[in-house]
Length: 187
Image 1 (cartoon, rainbow, N blue to C red):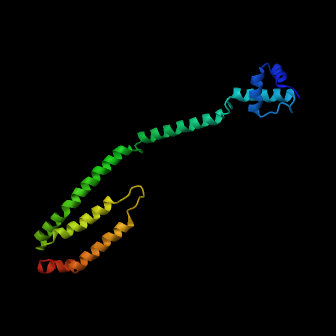
Image 2 (cartoon, one colour):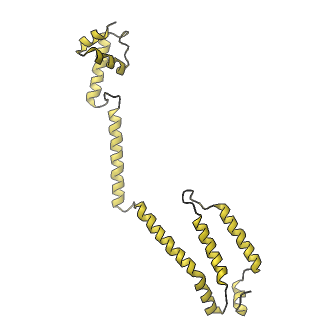
Image 3 (cartoon, rainbow, N blue to C red):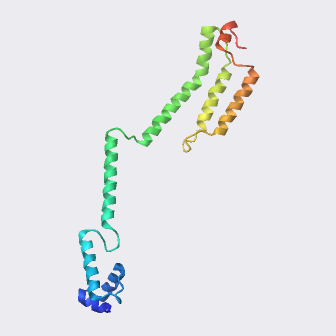
């Protein structure tokens, strides 16, 4: 059973370096021989020289592999972007916002166009407010859409259905195309 100083003399180190070394290598120097400590120390030095270990206990090979993996992923993303397979999220969000705005404008102008067309083609007067209610109901449902949950609120859809049924009851019934062609006025 050598002392730390005897091991230090044998390995040409100072006693504090031997103390740190046996802790790092997990060697009980009181139970091991000087030869056991020397062999463990040599193996440790070989690992360090081969780049498979560091003085802080970090596995350098694993670290290099992770770095290589990240570099590869970055290169793949760059390649996909150059091929046009990736888009900028901010640009996409802006484009979708513009598209939804244009769609909303078209929807809001639809009731007047439909009423005018029905009056011109078939001589039928249609309540524009009734058409506006339908369009606004759709727009309200779109406004409640939660992109994070990837679905709209089912309760709000049920409420819109109930409002529609109430309105249909108040109007009477929906007109079929054959009924619309008849007398030229909505019932």
